[in-house]
Image (tube, one colour):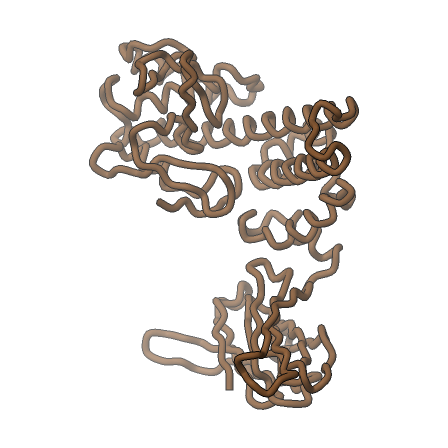
Length: 401
């Protein structure tokens, strides 16, 4: 017998316990309190399994099971007026007797299931081979809808994005909904420009296109970059420029929230101009000053004016806030991702504070190449701790040391 408890259902706030016995899949909705555990609803289904189930994995309302005869099925759990409903779909029919399934695992976004298959053509267990096969759990339309939905973090949908990345690398085309998001019309829609999730998704899609173009170039030129056609080079350069614009807009939305937090909690502000966190405030103010904010963002410009006035004795000028720790040369602000001094020493920027990552300990995103400063409760003010105690700016992934 196998058992698996899922997090609380989004509609009822009650967890589901999924278990198997023989060929049956059983689902129980529980009401858990500090004093008691009670059963709210239950249901079971036999499905397509003819022999005992040997593997079970559950992610939210999706359960995938496999059995020794090679059968793999998906069960989608939902709630109706009478209780729990289980809809079963056969993913893999039974196979010949020398092939058996021995385990299954569902991807984070419920787009794929990995099934461990053992080839039992020989008697000795040491000579048996185990292979992993990937089975899609969503159709192309379902994967696209999953990606375009603003619900959840982008990093939890990387399996759905991988679904389309494999298509894009081959012919750099996307479904219409995703293509519209990655196209030039994006910047003509203010609602999209101010939606952080859509900006993060657009950046990821553009990086997929970059990979596709680079793959095409490598196939055509076999590494001889001087033979790249002008059309492909123009496409590559324009896509890179578009990624930079998207990242700048994401950073600007982040800065507006960070500066508003500085304005709201006065006791969390750096009090002296020589405090290390002031550099981050001035860098954010410089980015706002260099951007093309519209009239409705006058509140942000007002906060920037207050910051520049309060920390006017900092001793630095706009775009010249930091110095290189290796040569003491000034490092001009050239990018939200990285900057370098006149002697060529290059440093990455913290995606949250915008400060260069030079001496302080850093963290890396688990899913992309972004880095961040490690929060320091002894040195950082309450405002800076609030800025750094966030997820990755570009994909919502966790930042780890």
